[in-house]
Image (cartoon, rainbow, N blue to C red; front, side):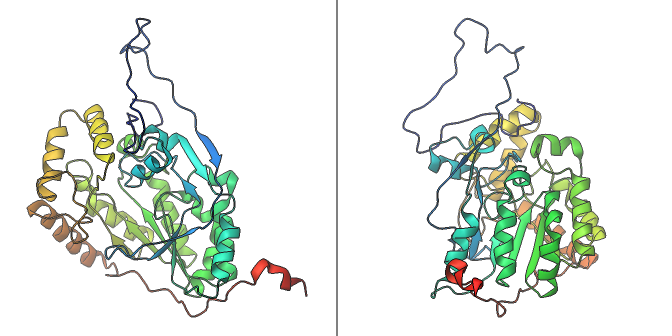
Length: 352
């Protein structure tokens, strides 16, 4: 285990041309009493040709997204986006949270794409793959630049984050929300600081996320809580407490998904589970298989977010009862697409 990091392993990605293996060369460097040095975070700038990603997944509530970064320093061990690092020839394990990519031309590229004659306005999500407000955003401000373009063009935006940094941009989000153009969803996985330390080590602490919900709501920004992912025998017992705390802070909408383990994430989660919860690892995995038809993951759209079977059905009932008791809206509010104004190409006409 490495202090301050989520993954405890760094398995090769599925597209790797070679395999790596650790071995003790006799100098004792792999001894149990010798902690591994914490890998430093590196950020590499990436040239891009496009920035708006589209999807037609029936279980995803948006069809467009923008990701200013690849990889995420928050280190959430459960992140379903980890396997995307394999496309870069990197590991979805520790590499995902230490070897980051930034897209400095994200805002300029977005402006060009929004200016196309063929572009049809639909809400853009920030945070679909990695957190747009992860720690490096404090200095790089790429998410801020993207949000400025969306605010300028009156383009609807939804945000998913577990960072308190989102309140930095209230000067943009509050006016957009007043026009029905913005909504923020805060991910809240646990209220237990000790669990948060190992589950999502560099994300905002639970109390700060609740304070973030409160500040967003007070500023008039519609805010939802994502009690996700629900992990059997790890954090699922907190479902009602998470929803109650978020509702008290001002969240108006709630949702959840069951832990998803695509591709390399199966091994990464298994390694983490056995390192931190060896006493219940087999139980957790058995419950996961019970919700996935005997497998650890099933990508079928009809059930990949919620699972199937008795345990999944019980979780769904618990959520519905808590949602209704607490007065949460059953669906997120629709954003206004009619106000969008295409940016001028190149911006030169603004000089006249």
